Length: 309
Image 1 (cartoon, one colour):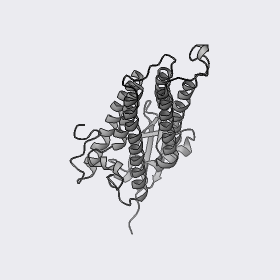
Image 2 (cartoon, helix red, strand yellow; image 1 turned 90 degrees about the horizontal axis):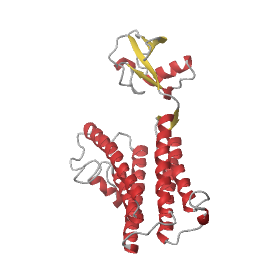
Image 3 (cartoon, rainbow, N blue to C red; image 1 turned 135 degrees about the vertical axis):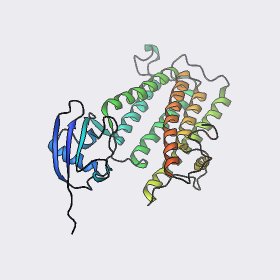
Image 4 (spheres, helix red, strand yellow; image 1 turned 60 degrees about the vertical axis):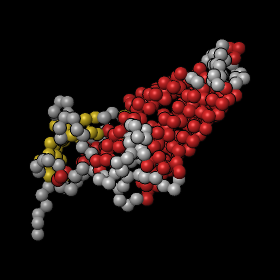
């Protein structure tokens, strides 16, 4: 009968190298997540999501990594870093999306002190302004609904300081573009109804496409026994998977391009451009991960723009 070899885990402060705790008789098949829980019992204010444990100064260990599979002997030395206060992803997205929704409406209804007093609680004579408000409102309501009912988050969290910056970005841009679109001196698009209607069609199609991709990802996570990469289904909006790895980002960019053309507003175009840059970075990362993990991954697929990028 084989005898179990227990591990000893020493946890040091990453900055001072001071010993914070010494865990003995740790099961060899224990995960990093379980070690974080043991550490949490000794330091209750450092809950697991707030902890980063490393073997080396930079690369953090994943919660699902097993102790005996790490390049250590029976005595492992780990370094602890405090990640600061954390919030779950559901609360993160609720905070990021509820703000822009309400901020835009303040400008649309022209509450006092935003514009001159003579325009308080007045409405724009241009139908495109009301249309833009409806589109913006529906977009963020869709995001909130997806956050609550569609998206499936792991136990991942985001640092509170990062959430503050993200909220400042979303809320600030919402206020900036809403200020100009709802301004009493706003002028409609140069090509009138034709420009508005074509842009509205792009906006609606991309919103439906984005929602369809999110539903597909949700069903993939809930239904698949073995990990696999997402692909097209009978829904035509998902056929973009034939060409790109992250069609949800492609549709999201298309949504804001449509909104930019509809309103002919420079702050909206800038928001769309910055969003495209960030989503391209995310899409390239996912595309690379899919290609590395799955040997049969379709070679025709690009990251975010079919045949180009």
